Amino acid sequence: MFDKLKTILAKADVDYGDIRYEVKKSTSISFSGKELTQIGSNSTDGFVVRVLKDGGLSSVVFTREDDADKAIITAVENAGLIAAQIDKPVKLADVEPARADFMPELKEDPRQISMAEKLELVGKYNEIPLSQEKIINTTMSYREVVREKHYLNTEGSRIREDLITTGLFGEIMAKDGNLLQNVRVSCGGSNGFGTVRDQESLFEKRTGLALDLLKAEPVKGGDYPCVLNPNLGGVFTHEAFGHFSEADIVENLPAMREKMKLGNKLGSDILNIVDDATLPDQLGFYKYDDEGIEVRPTELMKNGVLTGRLHSRRTAAEFDEPLSGHCVAEDYRYAPIIRMGTIFIKPGKLSLDELLEKLGNGLYILDAKGGQTAGENFTFGAHYGYIVKNGKLERMVRDFNVTGNLYQTLNDITGIGNDFVLNKIGGCGKGQTNIRSCHGGPHILVNNLVVGGV
Image (cartoon, rainbow, N blue to C red):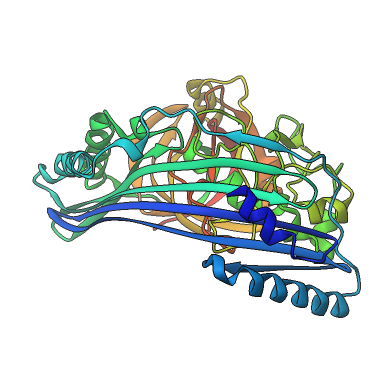
């Protein structure tokens, strides 16, 4: 394949060019209640070519090898048109060419597991909540995506890498009278089919939670000090902070670019944030991004001070900052854009009991349930929580969201747990879907959040 890619790219009279070829294999199994609603697999493939000429950067996607000549001509023409319209020519940060073949270590390759076995496993998990009287419905899905990637550029880089993602996720719906409660459940990762095996206790626990929520009471709205569990703290880190660490988000927003200037003090002294896609066996793991750059751990904040940013080759040159290896595409249908890999607050020294003791009176809030950001402000739904009195958990509460300001919240983080949990199922919709978006971290104590309730 690399000989074919080299032949295609050699026809481009440009300052720089790269080409990525992918085979994408997908498998899906879905249940709605007891009904099997989807089962199947497919394989598709395609090419993405990017060219830089006279300061204009252009990309073209094509799926037939016979269309390669036309794609190259179109990409070069478009680069010329872009170059004539922009005030500042595009530059790419200098890199050493990379030559590598990387296959991840897997706990059972899902490509070697039969569809019948996958179906049996999903059906077994789906039956766990449906066996309970007050569970009225479920949605349960298995998704498997394999990206077999070949990357080549005119500077001499040549990279072969597979990305393999497996996940089982769904929703459990409980009802008592007119009261309905939904609980999400998920497992999976990037290191093989073994990540979705032996998960019966997880589905039993989430089913029990759905039933417990029928007995919980709505929380009273107001301002509260809160302890957030790793899931909700991770969503805050990703959504409220992480996107502003992506260089392409802030580069054309002068006020935000000034606010997110490296060296600015934006958080509490105990706060350290990292994006580390090199962590093995985690959902966000990869070796090379879709520009052929080896990903590296990137410290974004140290002791509350901004210390790093996530970059493509273009933005690294624009900001005159180090490359990070965070330019990633959804698949062969897209040119890559800057994406987080595995972002988290680094663990601290306090146990959960110590965080609750430090909290005193407030809320312990668990698991994100949707949400949105608007500039520096955020609102996230929460699955459930507990009233905390004198450092002890009391009654369960439900039906609420949390709202805050990014910069105020970064300074209001006054306690960080010594635990560390990363999510097993991802999903970020910035421009393209990133199913390997990974976040999590420790429990965190936030001095003040606005909680919407009754």
